Image (cartoon, rainbow, N blue to C red; front, top):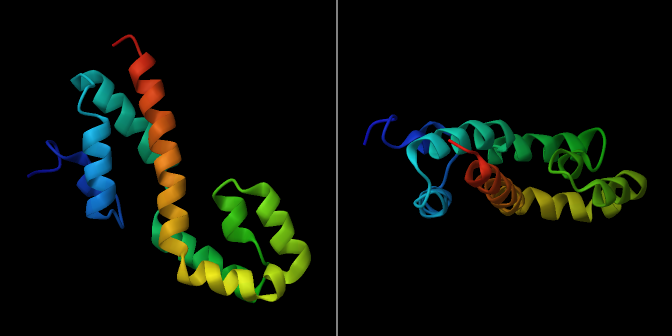
Length: 121
């Protein structure tokens, strides 16, 4: 499969589960809508390795950075003011960084799918 037929291969850190989810979700879209979806989703998607780096930054410098990046403002503030829940929450996030990224990416895929479906193309 080349990148034109499967543009999701160009996403860094994509898992087979995420690729299957995206292919299944965009199966009902026409070609223009798929291109629009790809354009929107590629701008919103977070790479799991980036979440890992932000979590490490949160462990060393400012707790909660990883939660702010994925739009969890309340949890970010909680981590910020409690020192990453006394570092325990930040350590748990170090272990679960892929799950944090996957949850965020699924939400962004759903939003992008809705926008692509509403496009007139």
